[in-house]
Length: 244
Image (tube, rainbow, N blue to C red; front, side, top):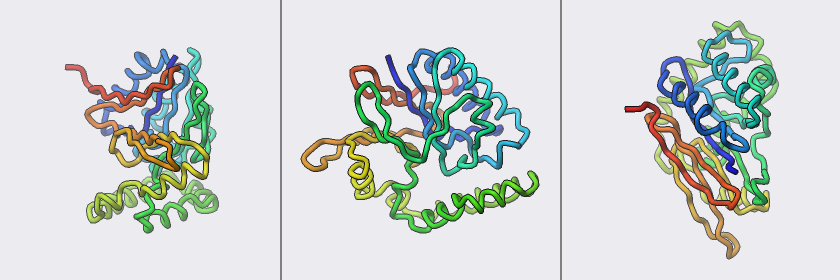
């Protein structure tokens, strides 16, 4: 009995090896799990469920097949694919979750989220996040022609890369006080998130009790997965995306 967590695959047509590794992971590993949780940034960017894209169809079919074989898949939006909607969720048979949620995993309460809201040392990003998560702004964007949406998305990605080059490593990581507050707000001692691309399991003493924050890595040359079993053992697994 295992439950799996992944995030930050950033799937795109320009990175076929990552897609191949992900599809292989679904067939070889996820098929044996009780559930799969994807904690955001499954795709490099998303401009709407109506975009005709072979990659999106391929991934939706693979996730749908996973569901049909008895493994449910749950999805939390990331900062790159927050526009994934009900249409794609239906095609892939994924369950869309709120941006943060406490789940029960073999009797243990765990807070799951993408992780970008924990980066409170980057107020500029949080302001931008609030703006683009506004339902009205999203509705206006999704009403634009596809070619214009793609143009806007590419411009924002370029600006983001340039901006990140000038940010310190501290600014781009989570804020410890924000982590503590989030755990306290949800009354839990376990958290799993992605976003920072810094895979690790961190111990944190809070109110005299040891808490754990598990951070997923991005999928570049290797895949990154957290596995939790029925005995509440948590393991960070990395594996090559391409076989030698």
